[in-house]
Length: 192
Image 1 (cartoon, rainbow, N blue to C red):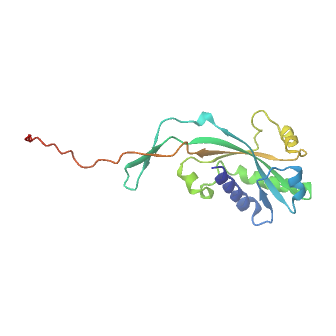
Image 2: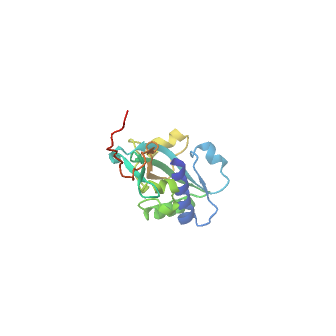
């Protein structure tokens, strides 16, 4: 699920923000070493935290229907995880970084969830939108000022983006096939 969300988020940024511009999208941690190796403009989309949204946890079973419309399997409801990304722009000039971050912010504010057409078939099949929250505070009482030293870098403008993504909680379990023939009752006594 994480890689699928990464791909959808990158596709959204390429489509709505970069619009063909030669800007790299990197999922690497924006460390000093990484920054020193960059050769052109980049957006760092660093996944720094993953946590379950336990308020959205459901119990029970969900029926999976086969091609004939009958129940073929059951699985537990998906769990929802908050994938927390720190997005930073890396260019030669701060003004360009601000423009790039502004474009990211404007684009993401236009979406309550990752667009369905950008999601993988498996994520779409779960039937739970991948909610999108932009420019929130960092989770677990963290601040950006705490995160940057941990990365070995200097504080810089960034956006905190949280994607609430569903994940299947266990494999579906097949159910017994549906019995559609009427029962046969034999009332004749058999000789021994």
